[in-house]
Length: 191
Image (cartoon, rainbow, N blue to C red; front, top):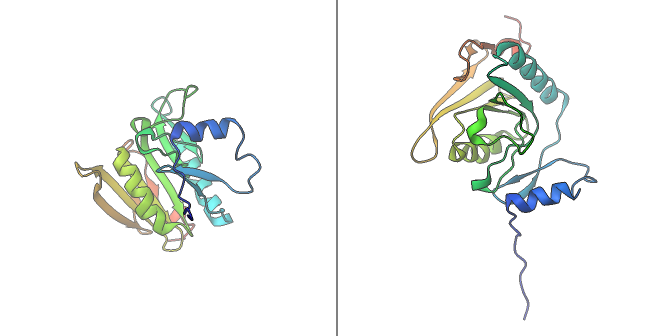
């Protein structure tokens, strides 16, 4: 009898073990674990990298470093969802993370810069981050030159507050309202 193949779903512990053993060291692309599946991450172009650099610099300048640390393109553990996404940038509670990656309860703001990944960042990642209970999530839309902001996780595990901010605006995260991001400056638009 012919047996059909099935998808192998990993636990976060199994994925961590694979990482520790160097299972992905020779790959020519980055991967992340989303709901037990290893997914390839889209390669970044120069605009994507520039926006991440801008957001990182802004974050460092605009935050109270005794309360908030900035992490870029590193892992976040969501064990209840068998996931280790790697947001382009995220703000976490200020402490050392020597014993494990930050978790949802440590995360104050997650930011994804989306060029070719806009649909997945607005759906798959938004659902994942909301279900994990991450208080605030931004998707920077490279092509549309706007930022999709999501807040207030409801009892249904979805973001209840959604807003689209455009280049004529400034925005601030809940974790540090004094941190004002000028969207026109982010996209290098003269006004």
